[in-house]
Amino acid sequence: MENYETAHFLSHNGTCRLTMRLYLPEGPPVAIFQIVHGMAEHMGRYHALAKELQAAGFVVCIHDQAGHGASIGRGTPGFIAARRGDRVLIADALRCGALVKARFSLPLVLMGHSMGSFIASRMVALDPHHADALVLMGTGGPNPALLGGWLVASACCLLGLGRRANPFIAKLLSRVNNRGIPHPDTELDWLSYNKANVAAYQTDPFCGFAFTSAGYRDLFRLMRDADGAATFAAIPKKLPVLLISGAEDPVGDFGDGVRAVAEAYGRAGCTDVDLVLLPYMRHEPLGETDAARVHSRLRDWALSKLPPDKPAL
Image (cartoon, rainbow, N blue to C red):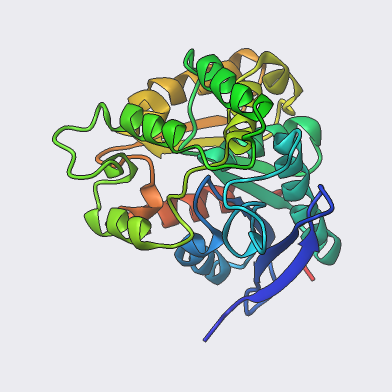
């Protein structure tokens, strides 16, 4: 039996109908918890976390982003927009949260995973009033390889290939991420230690697809901007920020990239930054066998950061 509502709203590009889920607690809600999922996955993969947060009194909202899951519709997987799809993803996530905030006058905790972490960073930089706390999971720091990836993807777009899947970049990224994994059995072992999670991702028709060249161009721009000085400077200085990643996540450079992001927030003057590196976990802590421990940690941190005078219905 479903324990969430399903709703739809129009994407910022005006051509895509996005699907969102809204989990409502049984009692009076304490806050909103908005989740922004990562690339080549979908909102259904966060169901267990959403139920845990729902039971703790949160209104949980998450949407399938453009080019993902139920929001693909008649579009192409991994295609966001012909131009500036990064802005579309940010605007869509802001719209999703705004719709829920209009319904519930409550504080909002914003969490983004992987690509979603870069979107969430930019959301708060562009709209400092959107969130009352920020969680970045599976994020990464500055990456010198971004320029090369952006140039390849942009060149493909200039050649009229922007709407086509780019398996070359997809395979290259998997190989780079798997490079630090000892004796990998698949190209996706970097996702998690949990082989069942890797297998489920591989067999899920809405996971693991190659982005289009335009989609990769948007991803690399998001990553660049999220780790740019302008983003850190724009973050509200008293905003609680949690950086939580697997200690063996190659996307976060096995902890070094995540530490670099935490240090950048500190240099920007942010006063409430927590860094958690989870041992024996890779890129998807929510997919590891001990995911319940991660759920509890996210729940407890979010509850601890709510304003003491939070309103109730």
